[in-house]
Image (cartoon, rainbow, N blue to C red; front, side):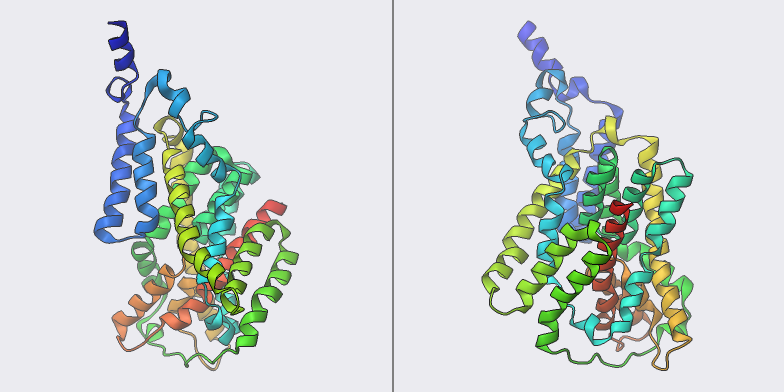
Length: 374
C-alpha cells in the first residue's frame, strides 16, 4: 500500500491543479494555431508541446529527477542555454545567413522605417516603469515590441530571468499573430490612396557592397551599442558567410541543421519553463498586455514615419511597408504584401518591405544593447 500510495502521489492526477489545466489548454491552443492556421509552426509547435510537458505535475517525489528548475536534470541542462543566453546568438547566426540585405542597400532611406518601428520598445519601457517594474525588468519587457523572439529571450535572461517565460511566450505569440494584429493597425492609419502608391523598382547592388556591408555595419552598430555585441556579431558573421562566396558549407549548416536544432531545444525549453505556479501571475498578464501595446505601437511607428517622410520625398513611399520595420522576418513583409494586394493585386510591395524588415532586425538588437548598457 505504501508503494501504491507513493505511485499515486507522484502521478499527474493526484497533483493536477486548475492552473495546470489552463496551461495545458494554452499549449494545445499554440499547437492548433501552428497546425491549422500555419502561424509560425516551427516556433509554436515546440513551444506549445513544451507547455504541455511542463504542466504535467509529477509531485515532489519525482521533481528532483525531472523538473526544469532542479539542478542537473535533463530539462534543466537544456534550460541553462536559455538563461545564459547561448541559444539566441546561434539563432542569429542562422538568421544572418538567411538574410538578404540587398533590398535595404538599394534604397537606404528605408532603414529609417526600421528605426521608427522600434518606437513601441521605448514607449513600453516608460509604461513598465510607470506600472512599478524595475528598469531592468522594464527593458526586458519592452523589447517584445521588436517582435524578435531570440532577442527577447537573450535580454530577459540577462535582465529579468524570473520573467523569462512570460516574456518569451508573449514575444513568440505576437510574432505568430502578425497576420492578425498588423492589418487593422495599417488600415486605421492609411488611406486607400496611400495604400495604392507604387514604388520604383529597387536598384541593383554590387557583390562588393554586399560583402563589405556586414563588416562595416557591424563595426558601426557594435561601437554605438556594445551591449549588443554578441547578437550583432553573430548576425553579421552569418551574413558574411552568405555573401563572401567561399564558405558555402558553413553557411549551409548554419541556415539549416544548426538553426533547426537550436530552435527545437529553445522552443521546448521555453515551453517547459511555463509551469502554472510560476507563469499564472498578475505580472504575467501585465507583460502580455504591454507586449500587445508594444507591438501595436511599433507597427504604428513605422507606418506614421513613412507618412512623414512622404511630406519631403518626391518619390513617395507606400506607408504600408513601414509596418515591416518590426523584426519579424519575413512575416511582417508578407503581411505588407497581403494588405497592399487587397487594394491592387498587381502592386508587389514585398521586395520594398524587406528593406525595413531586415533593418528592424538590426534595430531591435541595437535597442537590446542600449538596455544592457543602461
